[in-house]
Length: 199
Image (cartoon, rainbow, N blue to C red):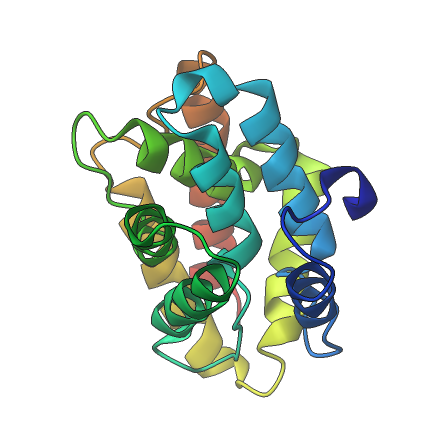
C-alpha cells in the first residue's frame, strides 16, 4: 500500500512516520488515509507549484494524532520542521511543508495557494466518496472517539460537518471539483441529519 510512496531522504524518518500512522488508537487517520491522499496528489501533481512539498505535507499532516487534542496539526508541523531540518532540507521549503500541515486544521486556502489547494483537496477527498465508503469513514471517526458519549459526540461532529458545508469552496484544485462538491455536500447533509436525528 504505502510502500510505493517511499518517504524521500533517509531510512529513519519514513519508518517513524509509518509507525505513527499505524498507532493502535487510529481508525481513520491511518496509512490507508495517507495512501489515498498521495494518490490524489500524484494524479494532480501538475496543479501544485511544489508537488514534493505537498507530498511531504501529506506525510506529516497527521503524524501527531491524539483524539481530543487541539494542537495535532501544530505538533505535526513542528515535527516536520525538526525532521526536515535534520535531513538538510532548506529552511524555506521546510517552512512551506509546515505551513501546509497547519492548513489542514481548518482547510481554509487563500486564493492562488496552489500547494494548499491540492493538499486540502486530497485531505477532504473522502467526503466525496461513494456512500458506502463515506459511511465506513464516518464509522471509523466514531471509533476514534469511542470514549465520547453519543449525546456529546453527535452535536460536536455535526458542527464540524456544518463548518465544512459552509466553506466558500470545499474543493479548489481538482478538475472534478464540481462533482466532488456535489457528492460531498450530499454525504455531509445526510450524516448531519443522521447525527441530529439520532436518539
